[in-house]
Image 1 (cartoon, rainbow, N blue to C red):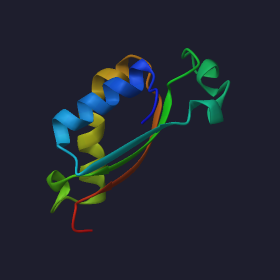
Image 2: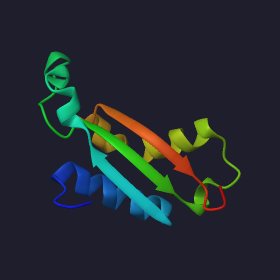
Image 3: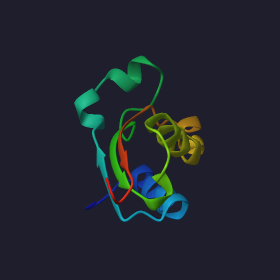
Length: 94
């Protein structure tokens, strides 16, 4: 991730600490949702992200459990204005 904003950097730090990823890509897609955040009462910018995460921690977990684990790890960010995540989560052998 080049030149991440402060929320993107925190997301990267949080997911790295929680999942020890084999790979992690975070893309800020907030610009694609311009004005949407403001309509729901959020400051514009760093509200929508696409996350691709490969972690051994996901082995044996179904898609819902994986998503739930990521959302739980990022709970503080959701409480502070993170609005949406598009997730692609997998174990290394998938």
